Image 1 (cartoon, rainbow, N blue to C red):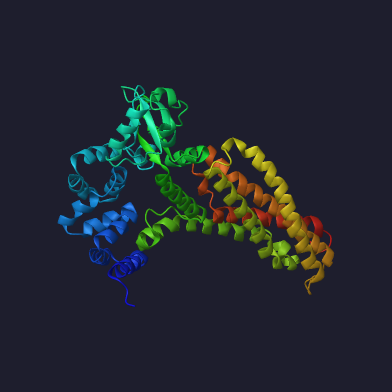
Image 2 (image 1 turned 135 degrees about the vertical axis):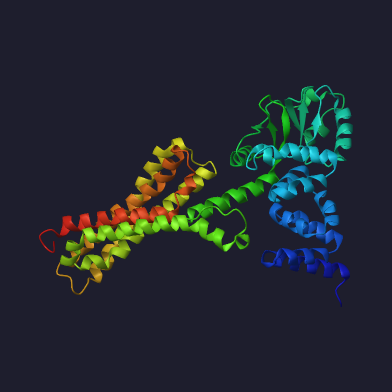
Length: 440
């Protein structure tokens, strides 16, 4: 049986969506114009603001107005911010007057603030309304493309927020009651200049579908909904992962970042890590005499430094993520320190036992020192280095936070390199302690 026209359209839309990241802007526009109106709308609304801006600027001028008017005010503001500055006024002119006023107000806020995330379209009521009047009024508001009616916000004559009531609570209330009598006054709010990550934490902590945004005078400016926060969480998590990996955060999807920009984002950390690695060579040269006397020590250098770097990378990754999602606060550093002392000792002891068994059961053939002594050096060094790596990895994000820097800047490669250098000092110091009088 041959596929229907609708099935073919769906297939073409799915294929275009899958191939989208690999296509040029011209190829995207050509494929987009071949879609049916319904499929084109679904694809367009599912794109990021960056991709929407690129696509519309590649379409004929006569088609742009149709698509930009599909966007809610907050999405249109994101779209305009992603467009080149010289195109923004022309794009704003394509929006209807009422929406353009809303979008212009949103553009006054920074992208990563609550005001930049919010939608100015929300359900509102006056406290003196009767419940039956309020329901009828909400029906009229719903035709105005409200962002959500999970929550209805109760405002006084000066647009100050005085209460909130859920859609379900309003419909369940007696019709002759006033809104003031059935509303709740303990409303969770955020200021319009709050950072988007803090807004996400507020919504997550209180399990909300939306949160109202207030200005300094307590007047409601809009709402941030949970679907906006999903994008924020993904953006923040991507940025943190990129920083933890030892690169500056990318400003666009990976395949859309130019090679020169990619190099610029990565070269800084690579240079820092390379210089740090040079310090490793300096430490080894400092202990050159000891290595010459006990060549067997050199065999276990990779084992020692990798264990310390890995433990540090683990600790810093866990702490950065805990700080990012609010599980740990900067003032909790003593508790984290104590936890990492205990965890580091246990982890170090486990690796130390494995290292002791390896050296004791399979000792180097050319070692002049007893296998037991070499095994003790390796085991004790592993205990100290894994403990040290855990402490450095856990405390560095707190130190950066205290200095007002992003804790995610404590990248795993940086911590690993730092622990590598100091780990060698620990290793050779332990070796000199145990092997003095035998090999050293």
